[in-house]
Length: 446
Image (cartoon, rainbow, N blue to C red; front, side, top):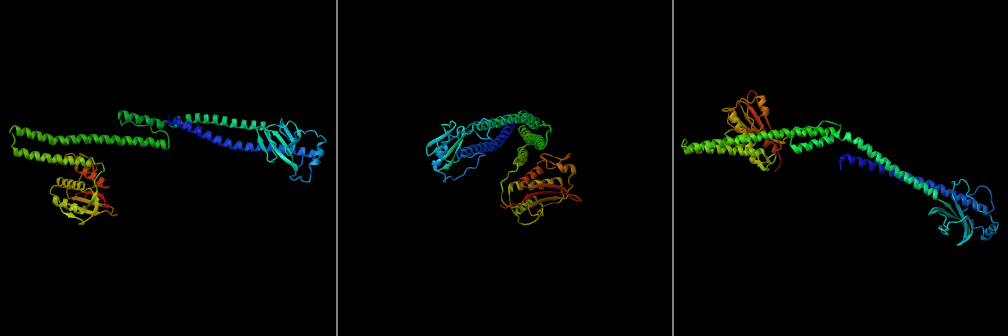
């Protein structure tokens, strides 16, 4: 079931429910009004009969609740006058049929009209509804009651007609609302439909160059723009992935080609075993370093955090690289010691390769808010041009004209290690000369 159809059905259901609730409340009010009018007519009818039994004339009086002073014999004498039945007094609904009977105990003394058989001899004063009759009893004396009944078929027919009108109106208006919702939701949901079609084409073809038109307004417009931004990011990610794979294959092919050529030279007697062993060892180390770098880049934010002394680790790396260390003797945090060591070694190696003969040092400090530890490798070399500085941390990027051997992964690995530790890698040129590479890592308890 489409969203458009669900929306139309929901609106139809909401309209029908609202109309039914309103109709129910109106029906209850209309029923109280009709039954109240009918009960007033019945009371007036019984009052006229009671007054005639007492020999009175004129407008009907209100019933007296206590007639204990009247005796049954006195009422019997009055009944001998044979007073004819009274018609239903005004204001009675036109066409309404009324009947009455005088009851003493369980004996009917007199009837006005043909009293309905379905109404029992009930002397309770409350008005009640029995089938199509509204009836009640009025006490005239000891064990003497006047019972009257009014036909309620017209009232019931009016109530039934009201119910049918409410149901018919709810049905028609709900269908009309569903039709209007169907017409209006088409243009309103068009951006969503285009988005669905574009997503299906991307899933089927893998073409990330597709874009959806920026249609609609509000949330739908924002959704279209967000979807296009997602496609742009995915396209850029795929392009970087393709370039990364191509560069990785090229970097792996280079040492393998060198190994094959060296082994061919050994087989043909053009190289000695010692020379071949030296070349093989060098290329294997190169491949090992390359594979470790590729594995680090493939971690995507994952690392094995353990408690470590980052100051002690920095001192060990600086001593191994033969550079001075400046900073605290101890700084406890948590992190991946293998990745941090690899990142520091890459930064120191880059500084020593691209600034040969220039002083290099490793520093450790806190950020101003003491939330990060800053491992800074600083040299006094020529630095980097601004255009190179922006791209230096990209995988396999090498500045144009660079003759220093390498694979362009050192800084990208350091940047990835910083992300694993919820930090960042910052590169900046120093004045008057030199370059500072800062590895920021978040200080966290072990």
